[in-house]
Each structure stands twice: as structure tokens, then as C-alpha cells.
Length: 334
Ligand SMILES: NC(=O)c1ccc[n+]([C@@H]2O[C@H](COP(=O)([O-])OP(=O)(O)OC[C@H]3O[C@@H](n4cnc5c(N)ncnc54)[C@H](OP(=O)(O)O)[C@@H]3O)[C@@H](O)[C@H]2O)c1
Image 1 (cartoon, rainbow, N blue to C red):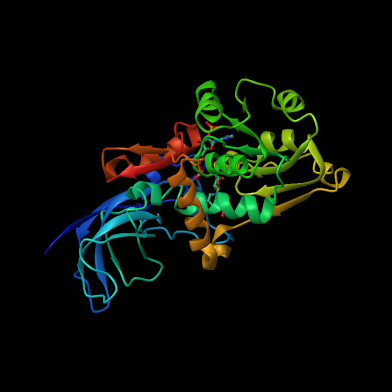
Image 2 (cartoon, protein in one colour):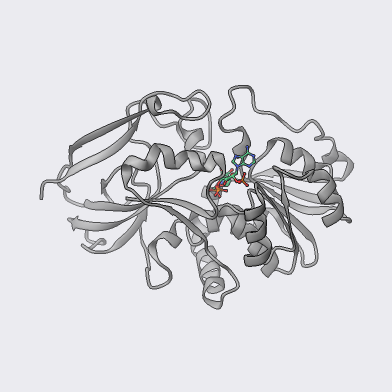
């Protein structure tokens, strides 16, 4: 079967927010699958803030995307033909397929998705890397105890919304920080957070004094910048700050801003720990089993924000992560 691929390649390393000139749209024939390979039609693309960091040159936890290469992205798709013993036509699979309509795979780092457990997009969010990041980052690194106060930033986003719900399930008091009154309402009314702070309209330090009078025991930080500084000012003795990400700094054209008040870590005998979910790869099934159980019994809600319109929407859809237009897991439907 001759197929034509549609792809977005990295054309230039962005300065600030990615623009159209940083991308090259290409079309080309899809090669046939060789021995031990299969072809996937990509149905859903995962849009992740980290994609912005992969566009930069320099040392990181993963190699940068090369100029001219298809942009790296996780996705979920359907096997359309196969010469691989472990993958059959019609199976739903998850892997890093790139920003393209079709991918060829040898099966490495590809898993078959159980759509009986949850619809395919949920396997990119609550049962995918977001949920697994929330699970290990909070429980293994943050180590909250019942009754302790947990604060999470980008709380209405994919990772943050699950962090807050797990903390609530574990008996913690949960405060979410998010941009906008609507997101804050979702956190409290739908996801069961104890309180929410709108960092765009409210004084985060003052609101934390009200909502966390005894201090913050665990801060799961997704955004960095001024929000990180505000929460450091309110740490409890022995607090753990989990550095999951710093989305407020990913598009900065200056040196990223570090917290001026980092000495609060000393004062409060607190720790700040960097965390990369890939280090937990061998334990992913443990997280997925527990997250799926919570989804089944209704204690965990999975929110997806699916952008329709196909691959042409990719450059604009990615930007929604940085303007805060998404609530829950941002996904592009191809
Ligand atoms: N360490 C790991 O292994 C790992 C793995 C996966 C993800 N992550 C990190 O987890 C974080 C969340 O990722 P996600 O996929 O769940 O994305 P997300 O939270 O669904 O989307 C990003 C959110 O960031 C917020 N944001 C954007 N610019 C901001 C700014 N200048 N200041 C404050 N907030 C801002 C926006 O929400 P508002 O409307 O609230 O501003 C936006 O909705 C990212 O930092 C990502 O890199 C880490």
C-alpha cells in the first residue's frame, strides 16, 4: 500500500516562543515495513511543554532534535501493516512516533494500549507519561504523609491535575496554583482540591498564608519562576520541593530565573529534588495499575483537551501550552 506522509520537521532553533519559520512541513512517501517492522497510522499526538526544550541545542536529559529531523513527539496510533511477530494489524499502540501521520517502528519502546481500560487519549494523559510523572514525582520524591499540605503548580494541566488528585486520595490537604478563575473552579469543584490560587489575579504569597497557615510540606513544581519563589517563602520545616519542570522559563530569551530566596531551603531544612520520569521506566506498570484502579473507582478524573483539525494544527496547538489555553492533557487529533 503506497501512503503519503505529512510531517513537521524542525527548521530552526527558536528564540522565544516557536514561530512558523521554526517548522518545515514536508510530505513524502512512506516506506514499506521491513522484516521485524510495522507501520503505524498516528491517531493522537501528545503535546508536551518539554518539546520546547528538545528544540534547543545543549546538554539535557535527552538529545536535542536535530535541525531537519521530524519533531519528536509521543503518540498513539493503529498498526496498519506488520512484519513484526509481536504487533498485529489493528492493534492500538503507544510510542514516540514523531509529529507525522505515519511512522515505521521496530517495536522498541512501543507498547500495546489496552483500550478496554480507558479510551486511547487517556493513555497519553492520566495513564501515560503525565500520570506516571505525577505518581512517582509525588509519591516517591515528594513523599507526602496524610494530613500534610501539598501544593502543585500548573495545577489544572495534565501532570498537575493528577498530582493534586493523588495527594487528595492519599489524605493530604491540596492547594493548586493555576492561571484563571475558571481553572481554579475546576480544581476545587471537579477535582476535589481544598483550595486554588489564581496566580494571574491573586497574590500567591498572601493566599498561601491563608490556605497553608502551617506551611507547605510538599511542593510539586511544574512552572518555576515567580511561583516557585512564592512557595519557597512558605515552606514548612523539612519540606520537599519536587522539580518536575519550569514551563515559565522554557521560552525565555534571557538566562532562566532562579529563586532569589533559595536560602529558605536552609532555613526550613528543606530539600529541592530534580526528577525525570524516564528513570522509573522499569516501574511504569506499577503506576499504571494503581492509576487505572483510581480511574475505575471514580476517585481520579482524567481530563483531556483534544484539539481537532489534523496535523496542520500542530504549530498553533503546541503554543496553547504556553498561553495556558489547555485544561488537562493537551492532545492533537490527527
Ligand atoms: N520531570 C519529568 O519527568 C516530567 C515529565 C512530564 C512533564 N514534566 C513537566 O511537567 C510540567 C507540566 O507538563 P504538562 O504536560 O502537564 O503541561 P500542562 O500543565 O498541561 O500545560 C502547561 C501549563 O503550564 C502553565 N504555564 C504556561 N506558562 C506559564 C507561566 N509563564 N507561568 C506559570 N504557568 C505557566 C499553563 O497553565 P496556567 O493556565 O495555569 O498558566 C499551561 O496550561 C512541565 O513543566 C513539564 O515539563 C516533567
